[in-house]
Length: 207
Image 1 (tube, one colour):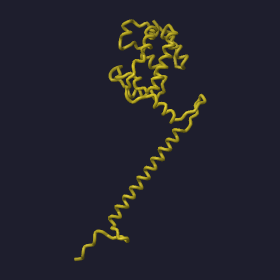
Image 2: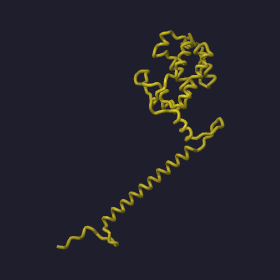
Image 3: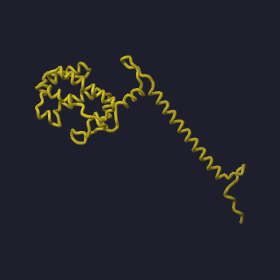
Image 4: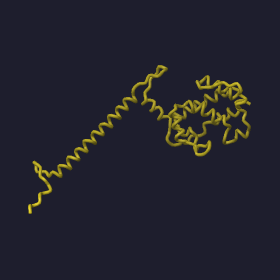
């Protein structure tokens, strides 16, 4: 009976083939990892370069995706913040303009015209991405009820913008005598879409 062949075959330099195979496989894995890392870095750098490319705005200014994302990041927060009430004066002026009853003024659920104006004339002035962020972070928990106020998901820069938009709204309200007049004037000043209607009273916009 022939003597069994040795399991480990020696290479020319005396290293066993099995050990050499393991080393080769590890080298190949390291090479693939390096290639993958290099590829990922190239993709990242290409994206960064693309984001920083200058975009010519219609009004003559310039910006970039990177700059717009940086601005957006300064406007929003991922978790609700501990801000105080922001709409007290707004509700006071709207109550006078819309001729709310004392019961409507005290009610937690204000008449439908209130959220309509807040959404259409205040929050709508934020960049679309900011609005999407607030809606995502603050969904309805039940019918027409959210757990938080939208503005609690704004950062300090976002709150400054909100206060400016509210001030604009209150200023125009003080100059008007009806909700309909306010909507028309506000839309004219701030470029909001508004279609005058013939039957304002029928739509409940004036008393």
